[in-house]
Length: 462
Image 1: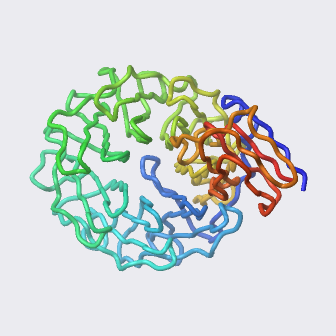
Image 2: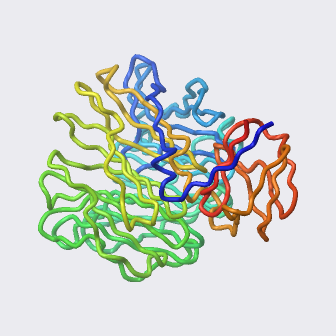
């Protein structure tokens, strides 16, 4: 077995290894199939590289039902479609949160109320079996746009609600402390006496971050509040994140990793629309100035975002030849600098909308609704298995592999640094703990492995 070690600086890694693979059509039924609106995440990836995808579908004469499929090999092959709802009304806009092998799903449903309510179900075995549907809201008007996040047995859900004696829709919050078995009473988060819509949610540590669009200043703007104690108490004062009061700022999406919180929205201060970005590096206590993220005369809107360590990945819709396509850009330094825009669906004559993304280890996963093959839309998938190699999972650990201090001989690696480190495969899965001294790695399969600070070292085994 011949083993060689190549060490690559962190900033060069994304350009060298980031390769988007061809598009894959996930649905093939002769009906409409749609991913959720962009502020609602309808894809999740487990630590075992299982990819979970949700959408709503009009097959079999239904107005709309929630469907699911999964891949257990990082998106290489896929299961059959599984119908999760059997509603007499419309079930749409699923949003999922993953914690370990548990999947928590919420969606909008009109089976009991023409205005719609929020329903929930869960799987505790990585999507193999599912609980019965559970109605989470009960209102005389509508409850819609639910988003969910999970951490351990804690599940957090926010939505916009009109009918609880509100003058307009307001943002409400529910929490489960037992992995979705029981739920708290609804807690009203906004009291602006005007429309508060389309919330987004993100978790990091003990903080719950929520942002939404709000009419309190007589134009739609992006507002934010947080809980620093896992939803027990909330900021008494809301924070406005968008700074222009003459046009409108819409539908924020959030991602959080460590102390960094990233909020992105689409904004009409530049005709027709552009993406704006704002970050906090202290868990939402203070915020940097907003930044214009796109400059495109055709329009940029409906973003989706994922964060892992210092890496931030943004996807959105942009008009290309008068039809929307999916665009992408990334930052490897917590949003300080950004890559150029990349068009991921460069096809004239069709259009692609509603991206939803997830990151796990070095891999990026993307789904969207695409009309290239079907006039009513189908679900498509794309992956990049090495697009997140800088700052992979657990990159905060003190891993050390000095570039001049590792030698390879006869199927063994001699680590002369003073600390342990993990060797990971291409999916980000830990495969071997390396310790100072001799490590026998001849049992590893030929391939590429990552390690070192920021995963800058690439170990190639042939």
